[in-house]
Image 1 (cartoon, one colour):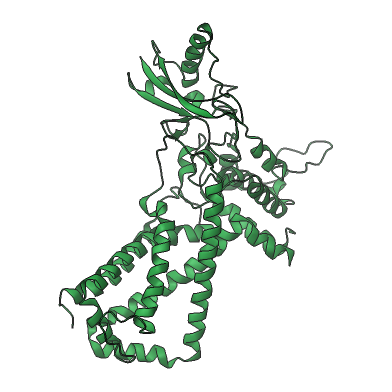
Image 2 (cartoon, rainbow over the protein chains, first blue to last red):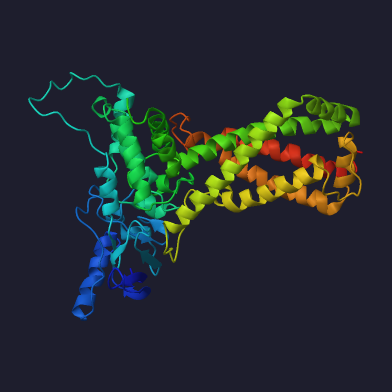
Length: 250
Length: 220
């Protein structure tokens, strides 16, 4: 297949950027979106041009490194799919494809399509963990957890931290990311001791990083490659409200 | 208290304030619509209902105070979160396709601004009688005030337009308020808004029927 790409090119964090047009010819429909970009980059390198910078790592949809705004949709047109798992068969021959980086104040562009998502790391550092006890490991079933809680916690834990939620959000809010972590830990017994302190500090950090406010458009849920539900945001708000009343104490 | 300030400083805290104040107004407009529908039962019914409301004295003023405070908080928080959200994306997309956002969710801000203008004009029109499009105003004959006003096409048009805005605002707002304050249950399809749709349709129809019926000459 032959495609026309419109790609955001930006030489550095402070350099001005613009959309540049490229032809991608002889692309196999079986290629992943990133492989298609690899082909374009090989040609650019051979022609002495700077290849297009984009983030990627595992290329099997589990690491959260890749993430592109493709034709105005975070991670492209397939639901529940990261950019690396999107295949060119999802596009028609001769299509024009717009490729842009995640746009948010908290995700500054490093170069071209690669953005700095360490703001998400700092939200996790603010409380997205449990202070684990060390020592001999417990018997596997010593702590009982209701099945529904396990399921919901696991669904939230599926977050790979790609940032598509904030990228797709019309308000550039990272609520789904933060809420997924708060829900994942808040539903499990190990997460209880720090549950309310966690809600306060992670929500506080999210604001500090310059993300916007959730207005429940639902765009994040649709963009999420792990299809995490906006129910988690309701849970985050509930924990935050309760934590504000109790001052973060249990 | 440090916690209280921290609560409101956060965007989640502001949204919770918007949710609570929004729901107070949802409750009010439901009662308001139910009361207004008495216009279809004739001047007696409506005027005696209005007389009853005014006879509650202090209670009426308490309700009014709660509504004004809720409105002010709702608007201030809305302006603040809007500013922060705009600042959160300094460079926009060349292309963005919405996947879930509805017309209602995307017009919350402008629709809300229109409703604020409407509320002010509406109070000046029917409560204080400061604005008198029909020339006359009676403090006791609410029925006559309605009929003379809504016979004027632009008054009827303004109310009909504003009530469409109310319908859209409540369709997204009633649903999202409940979620913002953290009380909605876990659901398989969280974007479904059946209750909210029913509520918005009822309020839109009830409030629109009155000016339309009067303008068409079915009442009065």
